[in-house]
Image 1 (cartoon, rainbow, N blue to C red):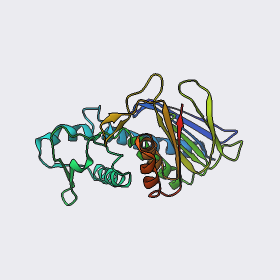
Image 2: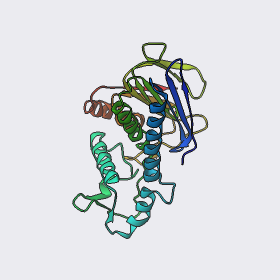
Image 3: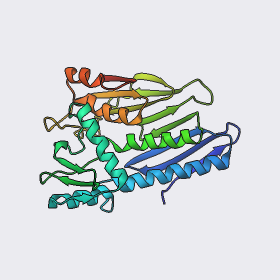
Image 4: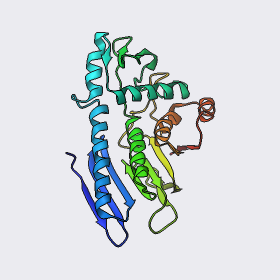
Length: 271
């Protein structure tokens, strides 16, 4: 069971739940809800969903489904996967093509991932290929959290997933939006303030303490410059994927990719 903390503020009808460590970072949920017990039940549903996804997509956990898949695929045999992982691999293929092959969970060449839909099985065409959902998992998880909140009729909520992946539904209890500041990770200075409402936001880039983690799959080169990107999108997964793509794409590629997505706002910052 995940370590977590939750509190309901009766006067504001505000629920706050947080998980200190999930998918390698912290998860916070604020939501306006008229009933404390129902809010708590919804929180448990959210946690259960996150735990399932972490157990599926965390390649650093030897027991996760993707870790087992990565270990078996070099045998050049077809490996059957769960229905959801099969759907996720299919989504990754769609983003691979929509982003001019700049989103690639293999960080090598997604075309080497062979998918047999009838048998729901995967095979890698070459040795050395593996799946890494680091630039995908939080966005997919946020999409699932959004679905759970909307199914329960929650209209006002804010989800902070490691400060880099955000979901804003409705508004703050004392305002007409959810305000978020984006600060320069090198100097701490304010770069831009966002007024978020019914939108997702993802931020990618290097920091003084963490760089060399963004790779251009088309060239195999790492992006080490002091740049950052922010992407606003109605779909949390679009925001997550495009925030990394924007860092490695050329200006021409950004123009092409941007036309393939609806309701997005992408910005690149030199820090």
